[in-house]
Image (cartoon, rainbow, N blue to C red; front, side, top):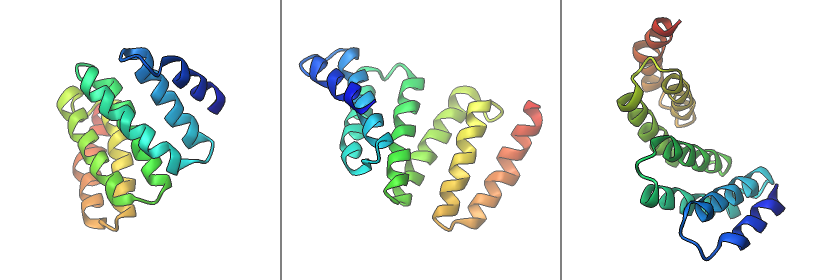
Length: 140
């Protein structure tokens, strides 16, 4: 997977289209999957920045790039930065598809984990009690 990521990067390095952006994303995820989160971090940051710049109309692509970056930061134990991204993702998902959407509930659950990692127990309990559990019950 890592070799494929590097090969794609080398192939599309001079382009500014979606192929280059996809190659950067694959390279970042490949580095992270290969146990190289420090090397993956700048690649995933660039991937998110490029997707925001060139693909801002596609919220799903932005959410995936944010999730990949958050996963990398989590692996580096940068929990405060993960929480910032999780808050942004959850708020955007609520705006896009509502609180009862399965994707929103999953992102909210990830945000609860992030709140717990940052020792924000009260906020975590409030989110679960007031938003996630009622949303999950409505969606069942």
